[in-house]
Image (cartoon, rainbow over all chains, first blue to last red; front, side, top):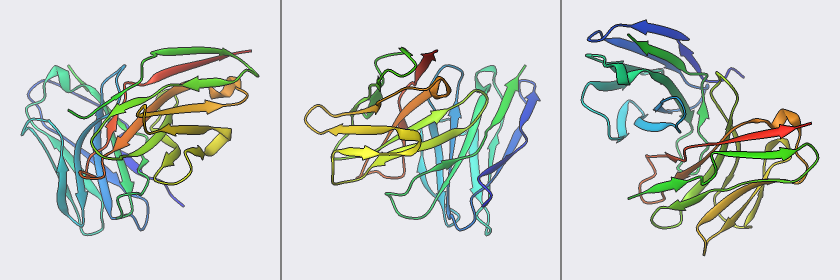
Amino acid sequence: DTGVTQSPTHLIKTRGQQVTLRCSPISGHKSVSWYQQVLGQGPQFIFQYYEKEERGRGNFPDRFSARQFPNYSSELNVNALLLGDSALYLCASSLETITDTQYFGPGTRLTVL
Amino acid sequence: AQSVAQPEDQVNVAEGNPLTVKCTYSVSGNPYLFWYVQYPNRGLQFLLKYITGDNLVKGSYGFEAEFNKSQTSFHLKKPSALVSDSALYFCAVRPRDNFNKFYFGSGTKLNVKP
């Protein structure tokens, strides 16, 4: 089975720009979550989507938004990029029940200059 | 506030010796508990989880973890470490009353020396 896939692998942007990151979940998984992992820290929860609806949101500014499509893939958008947005952005997918394991993709490395 | 603590930034162990990576949590109720491992420039790989039942959970690659409710801990263990176990380990917690969020610890770097 194909795991969680994310694109692009790496991205370099400048301050003030906008970025869109993409994620395809494991086949059959209906839930997608996004995390930000700054170097040297653990992942920080940004969003969870299930059946195209936002189910959870972490403590991130409104510059961060996401959506989930009918095929359960997802996009994370970040507007007005700041230097501090430089991080590894991880996507995770899971089945619908709360005890299910989240399976992570390889991440997108975003560098803001 | 919900939090997960991994008190050791780094753990050093010789190959063949037992290893323990510590995790304690401050989360309401009886949360679900997870361990993940991250290799350089890679995403997180699932190792094991505790949902209910036996306090000793067995997972991938010979790892196990012990849940202690009174100490709110979920320490990761392995009887005999391998050099290939060297990686970054994360403890994660999912509250039962707010299951749309995952809280991760700051990570522990495990170094296994030959």
